[in-house]
Length: 452
Length: 90
Ligand SMILES: Cc1cc2nc3c(=O)[nH]c(=O)nc-3n(C[C@H](O)[C@H](O)[C@H](O)COP(=O)(O)OP(=O)(O)OC[C@H]3O[C@@H](n4cnc5c(N)ncnc54)[C@H](O)[C@@H]3O)c2cc1C
Ligand code: FES
Image 1: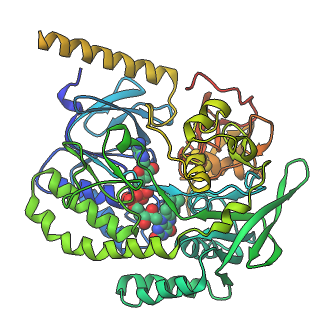
Image 2 (image 1 turned 90 degrees about the vertical axis):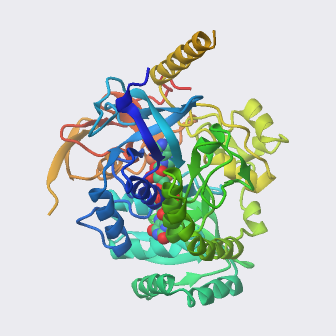
Image 3 (image 1 turned 120 degrees about the vertical axis):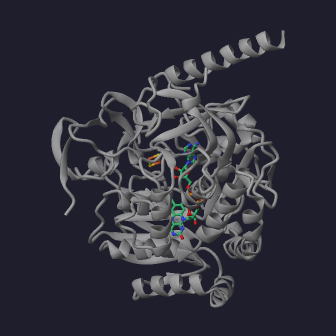
């Protein structure tokens, strides 16, 4: 089934900083490398909307240049939806075009299988969204979510924005929105001041992070940054439920802040669905890897946010290590290990600083929607004792996002663990699935033939 | 200056800068909701990165397209005003 033109020495899934670094490192020695992403362009979350000629960030520019100079085949708008036993993944184009890269031209189907010798998963992270009354109103979005929309063409000039939730991303987002002319009213961080202060102090010891922090501070001059503060309700009006304000709480004080947009995220959740589908071992919600970013599954590596939430520098180093290790350049990989160990400490600090407070559990009421795909309310979800039971009886997590949004929220509220992942890892059309099934059946028959 | 391209949103022709997503085109018409939820509430984009499916619409007759991940191309036909009955998805 797989002609050689669709067989890669190294296949990298996800073209954020980790995936770009992995692909470039693997390609250095001449291996045939493909990089795919469900976005139309490379860059991932942090470098979204940048390009080689328009990279504001020097790190981004360096990696875009490396990428352009390397022989890497990029498959845009392509998503991995399933995995087949013998070194194949099933991919589809999310925009209805045909799967394609320079060398494979256009494959005849919208859905296709690609073969790899080594697979590197660099699927990144998404934001954690916690339900509270009104969070489903239009114009209440993720913090990184609103930032991504602005990077891809949404105009926010003159709009009042409240940025709320948790994590350093809030500040980066606020600075970015301000740069685009938004009137950022407030940044509300749920973590308490002493912890945030300790975090800030530790940045003083890291030159690159400090420079970033100062740049953000300059861009945010005049915007209040309030710690110990979190949203409890988004208030809308009229038939179209236009967002008008957000109710915030800090200690025992509650007040409303007017806004056109509420940009709200509670730090990040790793995208481990594909790794789980491949049966890679997870530990405490992250993909377990060894010093060469090798997972528990042979020939499968993982780098960046799925292994730990540690920022862009860690993602890049992990990507490089995985790329080198995948092509057997273990000495080059080992050289980067001390750097990785140093950056790992930042990941621990992030986790400790932005741990979520108990009070965030009490903003929801029984009418609050938890599962946005199926409109399942908190009052119904609460009646069940596990993720599986809630899914079965309420359809919570059964919609097209496949529990990516409500799963982590129920984990926060009830300590539930989402059950095992079933393909397709992203909602795919029946036609996609039919192809996947056909391919699997054919392989099954072939392996039978061979074994006879 | 970025060049401009023309797309159709719910039948109306609009101009967007090249590089804009289909979602940006929808929102540039002044709408903040992209779809109606199963119980009829207005919904707009949440994640901006292709995981939540709240920005889904019909693009070039293809339903359930995640408009935040799709770049506008000249003549693209985007519509948000069709029923949200799931197509043949699982
Ligand atoms: C919305 C958002 C905004 C952020 N903004 C900032 C910021 O402004 N500043 C900052 O310092 N940090 C930011 N971060 C944190 C940032 O993501 C990390 O610091 C770092 O960039 C992670 O790099 P990565 O390569 O591991 O992941 P990412 O950059 O997330 O890249 C992963 C890529 O894999 C793709 N992908 C995932 N699954 C599949 C699949 N099955 N098939 C195909 N493609 C797939 C994703 O679409 C994505 O492009 C943001 C995070 C999020 C979630
Ligand atoms: S806004 Fe979440 S998928 Fe587009």
